Image (cartoon, rainbow, N blue to C red; front, side, top):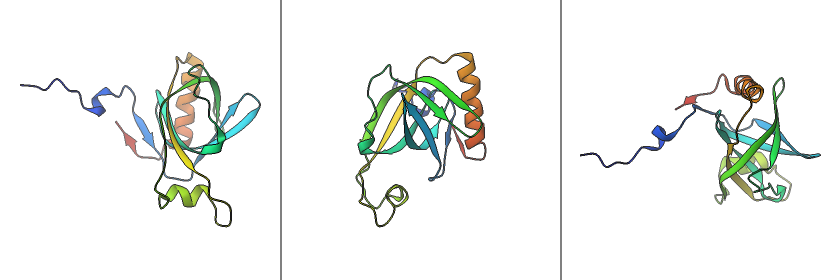
Length: 140
């Protein structure tokens, strides 16, 4: 008899690529630039750390540009699926994002899914992933 439950991994439509802490991506929102430290990424979305005061929009139709060294993915809808404060101040992310001597800022982790992607956006996203994550561990 089966329980009818699907495991979390079986629900994933895209392979996820994890990163070591320390690799930033830059997102553009209108004329501003907002850094995010990417935790993992797939063709379906990404998760990243950011400082709380950066006020990321929760508008499901908000569009962002994701900048790499060689590949950019422009005008992408990033709909928030989860977000929470990293409350454990001993988490390595606090040492990385809050340098000594500066006032400690709250850090949040946000997970987003991408809206529909054009073919050009898909190609650029694949290039972005290969650019930054080719040597990283691949998760399913």
